[in-house]
Image 1 (cartoon, rainbow, N blue to C red):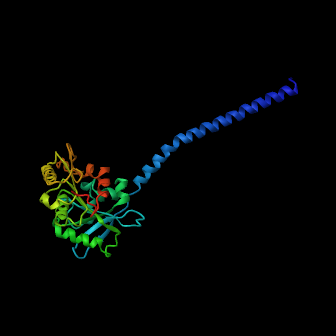
Image 2 (image 1 turned 180 degrees about the vertical axis):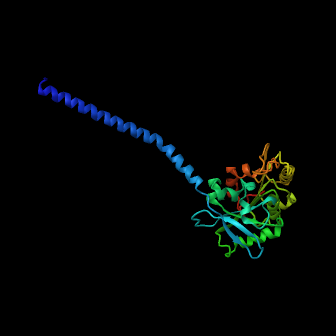
Image 3 (image 1 turned 45 degrees about the vertical axis):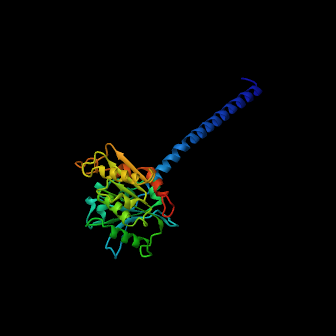
Length: 287
């Protein structure tokens, strides 16, 4: 049997090895945790982005008779920009929930309802989507804006940052509404507009058109011609913008309408929302 002193030395060495192993294991675990933090943070942010969805609320304007779905960012404590979205012919009627039907996938109300809107839109804009059963009349749209800006609507809207947008019939409606009252709208976004006013009537209003070159419902020439005329009239490219898609999709559920689903890529464009927030009435942003 080894002397007692040797036993003590062996025991001490064994204990030191055990402590060293435990420290090494603790360091390795800490390193793993540090490496995992960015991944965990990304997952948290992704989950937060997907948690934006909530059923849109309803409002009614007794003056125009228009009813609408609307979205307001959580804990809005100060006046926010307004995005007024005008639907296309496929959502016409008097059933508000038709505004978030499958065929309208990609539009702001649908994406906000389902929690798939870009965070920039969900955090910074009040979105109102009225419904019509008789098309978009410029005077009616502008009168509806009066209601939204009144205390009766109860929405904290910044009157200097009101933007109108729409798809197809609604894209044309947005352009005509802005042309009728250019002093009311800080910018207009038209997606596959089914018609356009005279370019001269939009000379002071920033415009961004999106269109599919392959659109079999509304030819892209409508958007192309309008932007060309705006630029010929003196608007710079930052205030008369055009985005053309070589192969825009068909709206979901409407495979025969190839190219007419441009809201899906258009409203998923991050630069669109940054561009809008740069536009304010009285800022001299338009040419």
